[in-house]
Image (cartoon, rainbow, N blue to C red; front, side, top):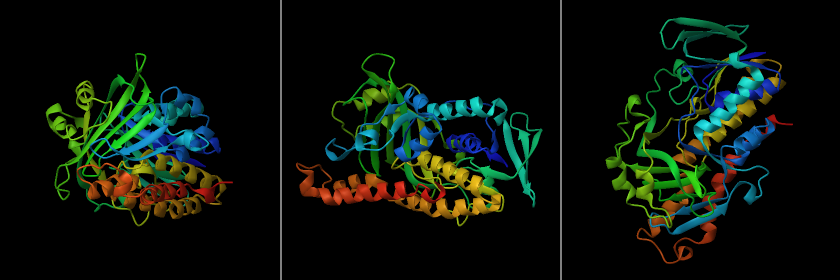
Length: 413
């Protein structure tokens, strides 16, 4: 069996590794001329790290990331709403990692090249179209730089792992329109900064209308520092008028973000100075897409953000893409026919991820901050009197339970 994977992101590269581990050949086709380590920080949860650990990637991840110890939710005044241990510290068998997205992608990319060979990743290839028949799928690629005919490939299946603007998804749903915007603009950056708290903890302050996120993603260049990721999310616009595609991932401006950053106070962190020290940072709209009625069309299916783009809430975007890859790889190696595997994969993963998309739209576990801020908009003396522990726990744990259950347990064993 052989697979064509469209997209060299975290999901597509993870799938290539997992297929290889099960004796299935795979080639990744990426439109960019090279897979560069770009982006900013993300968190990858234990249920996804477990899958990467089984591939032997834990030492490489440890070399470039921080094992997250604790997560603290605060209101915008820096008062603690909820705190909990994470990863190994919470009893999980593997860590939760706070990591630069590009470095996570780089670890997986390097493993693909080492195990599958350099030719397993074909860069500068833009998908032009594909046809499937009873025997397989034929895909046609153009040279992304020259715009000329580049290559034709043939395989048993094709997997679209090409992100929120997926060409494969658009082929089957041409009238889907643009991504769905919630009116929130995000500014994201990172720089070396003195470690706060224990140097391994994550802070989220404020609700969905206005949020600050802080966490270390690597050791800093000087003792006592960490490469510190920051995010400022503010509801600034009309959700019915999303920014055009070219407005994504553009360089941010201090004059735009600093007035919003002044809303937040975090004990022990000079937020304005951190942002000003970051040099280049980036601006993005917070977008997702409505869940699809189906992912699989015969020998073609979707994975990761191409299948279920979700708001960056609850640390589940990359994590769910990795779970997609594990589920699909397991099913392919067991199925009598690739079509059966792709159909079973959709049946397992589509409803699970659709539920996470919906929960993220409502704020995910961070909704506990919104709940407290709605009752005490000017702060509080005792959070227990605002919202008792049991009710706060119910909000946070209900989300965690759903996302862990989204692991494709039936496909294992």
